Every structure is written in structure tokens, then in C-alpha cells.
Amino acid sequence: MKKASRLFIVIAFGALFIAADKPLKIALLKYNGGGDWYANPTSLPNLIKFCNQNLGMNIDPEPPTVEVGSQELFNYPFVHMTGHGNVVFNEQELENLRAYLAGGGFLHADDNYGMDKFIRPQLEKLFQGSKLVELPFSHPIFHQKYTFNNGLPKIHEHEGGPPQAFGLFYEGRMVVLYTYECDLGDGWEDANVHKDPEEVRQKALKMGANIVRYVFSNS
Image 1 (spheres, one colour):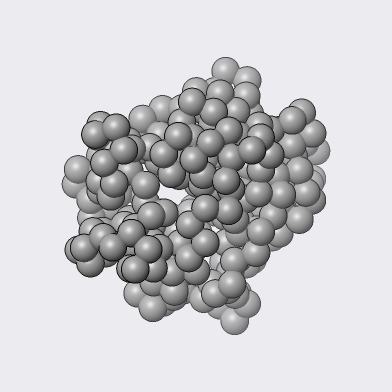
Image 2 (spheres, rainbow, N blue to C red):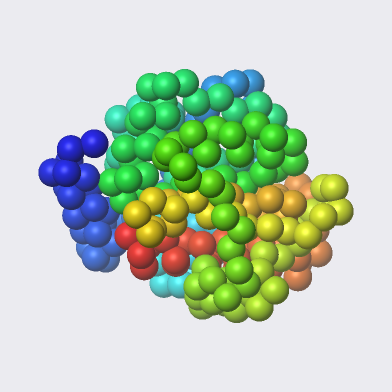
């Protein structure tokens, strides 16, 4: 990626954050491979509403969908992806996503159960030599407005393992957050979808708000 192009993207993302009168944008990432990228349709709108109400943010309440290989990706400083199944990024999509992340963008991938064995190898293709690194509980993402001293909250059981947060770093900046054995997105959904206790939903929304705040504070 050309240095000038990267600098332009970073400046553009920063301008979006500074301009309080211009809504910030969070998009849902559409990917290929057969996985249900469209799972949890109420998740992002609910998280955005929570952030606007509790963090005083100005995020567009209607998150758009953007494809991995599209140039439209560069219009969104934060993209979220989820699903239960296969994920495939072709070479053009990898290059596009790589340029987006290197230029200041951020991806949150949330395993909705069954995505893990597919998403890990795709993410680790992005930057040569880069591996997903488990985040310590002391990481700032767990200590934004809301404090999670034990890391991610456990929203759904899945395989019964501990919830884990992994980061992928580029030039010292975390560009991808991968949340596993947690299922934050289910906790963001409408209360009548999974019928989780309100306490559990609040933990998921608060952790999601921490992620959003971290991303826009470090763009």
C-alpha cells in the first residue's frame, strides 16, 4: 500500500471521530465461503444504540453491509463480522482487507460458534509472520468506561471453555480483535431472541461498548 494512501486513510478516520456533528460508521462485513455472515441481525443496531446512549457517541444507527473485497470498506473505520461456519478470503479480498487494516481500519471478528477453525487461518494470512496473540486481562480494551478485570464475559457456553480475546497486530497497533468462546453478538441481540438474563445482556453490551470506545479512541 502506498504511504500517501495510507496516510489519507488514517487522517480520514481521525476526521470522522473528531467531527461530532458527522455520524461515525460501523459496518457489518459480508464474506464468502458459505458461513452465515448475516447472523444476529439485531446485534449491531442494539450495540450502536447502547453506545450512543451510554458513551455519548454519535454512530449511525443503521449499520450498512460491506463486502471484504469492496473499496467501500475504506469508508468505515470499524467493521464487525460474525457467523457459525466457513470463511474464505480470496487473494483480492485479502489484499483489500490488508490495505484497509494497515491504513487505520479495525476488524472485530466474533465467533458465533463454529467459526473458529475457519477464521483463524484466514486472519493469520493477512500480515506475514503475524499471529493471533491472546490479550492479557490488563489490556486497555477491558478497562474503558466499563471494567472487566477477568477479561471477556462468558455469554454462551459453546464448548464450555473460557472466553478468550485475541489480537492481531500491525506495526504495534491492534488491527483485529477476535473474540472466542464468548459470543458477544448473541448478547447484543434483542432480549427475546436468546432470552438471556438482563445481567448477561448488559455485560455483553458493556464489553461491546468498550471495544467501540477503544477503537475510536485509538484510530
